[in-house]
Length: 336
Ligand code: ADP
Ligand code: MG
Image (cartoon, rainbow, N blue to C red):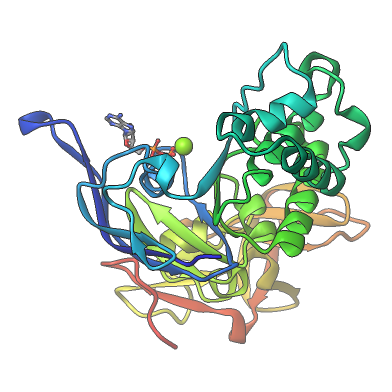
């Protein structure tokens, strides 16, 4: 069991004038048994951060501790972690059992113990009936479960996941997400999970660490991040469609951006006049894309029998207790 501390962690690649700083001082503490998701757009430094925890990348400055022990100088094998990647690279000629057992055999773990650990992991992951198959005879989702099994049998202090579900189709991804949650409930192993997918982050995380261009923008529960986004970046990255960010909202202050989520604008008889540009029916809900003066506003509401037509003027009212304010210069939330 282990907590993870990141203290002013900085990463630079390259040397001299080719040097590029990609992580700009991340401070965070991941609790023992906690499931934390690192989320942000492609290229923001998620994998780099995870790989520094794993020991696959050198830490340029700062300190990383696992279970109270500074690991900056420790090899990956000495850190008591197990990693699951997007490309899980199973050994094609080995059975599922042997794929899961391989790392333990190398470590000369006794045969009976290997069998016990593999059987237990296979039980948790419902792979028991597949142990004698080779990867070729498995579906993509089953292969990903074998990759997780290979990590579980090592009984590490920490699991590190780097976009492990990206190669799966939408249905399988949703299913595997539930399995990962179940796994975490049963094993309680401290986990760091990287994804660029905000829905995956919201559904899996106990807390999420939102990254933007090598900077940690916010570290909080999904509820915090959704209801009290720390910046305009977080406000527009988390939630789909994103929060409306209006520079010239009716009743707004100069130098202040108003944020209001599409689901917190109600259709009304009076209020903001919105010229309809287009609408999208999603099933239970309809999105209305409109214009309020110069600015685009998206409204999300329960679908009615009739869609507003293009160029019609409708009225919407923001729910007052759901309005957010951000400093226009810094993008930071203004405490309300
Ligand atoms: P993410 O996982 O969020 O997509 P990465 O951590 O892979 O982002 O990359 C963060 C930044 O660091 C990117 O700009 C990427 O180009 C750069 N980068 C990653 N690895 C290297 C490397 N080995 N050498 C130089 N730059 C790198
Ligand atoms: Mg990555």
